[in-house]
Length: 57
Image (cartoon, rainbow, N blue to C red; front, side, top):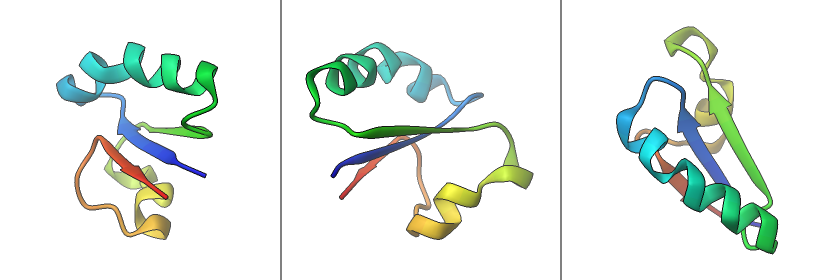
């Protein structure tokens, strides 16, 4: 299972969003976590992510 973590206000995340959606549609990426602000970074904290966008297994 591959998970993508992105942040809504991240320009790079916005740039790769269409690619991530294609990877989800193909079944390569199972989940895309979209986090809103620094107060709601639960997925990043739980997965040990420090930089977005990130793919993790």
